[in-house]
Image 1 (cartoon, rainbow, N blue to C red):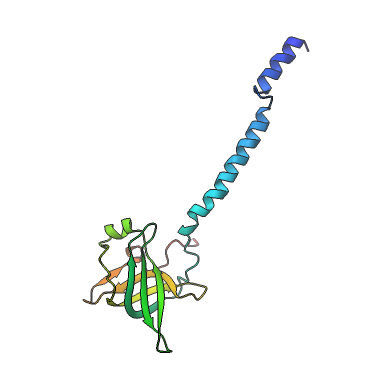
Image 2 (image 1 turned 135 degrees about the vertical axis):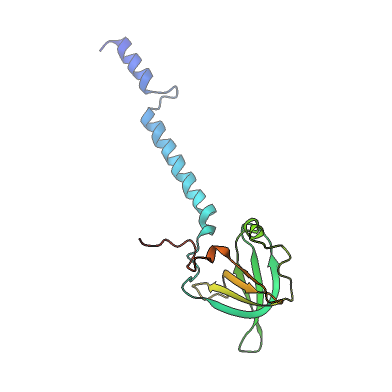
Length: 159
């Protein structure tokens, strides 16, 4: 092969910094993989695996706090326990954006409201869960319309 042909081939296969296209693709692939690994944590909060959606727990208690915050709203409810004290349960809801479209308002629940709340409990036994429905002091019910089908949410169904 002539010197001119060798130089032309080298120019086609190597970049200005002397790296081959395979090397550039390899490093780009590693960069994409690293970015995907880091992004995984950002999407992790969308999992519903921590909730036991095969069970429902009904709580009768008093609203301690209603957090109208992104990415999910939260209800803190004080529930009397068997020892005569109070347990505070933390209940995760949908995002305020979705709740608003479903008829909720940032004032739908107020501290001191006596309510009956239904949730799917946390699998680890911690006092908390995933919101299903709440009966307000006036008897009206606010539910999660994504539950209209009656089954769990975000759980693959075998077909």
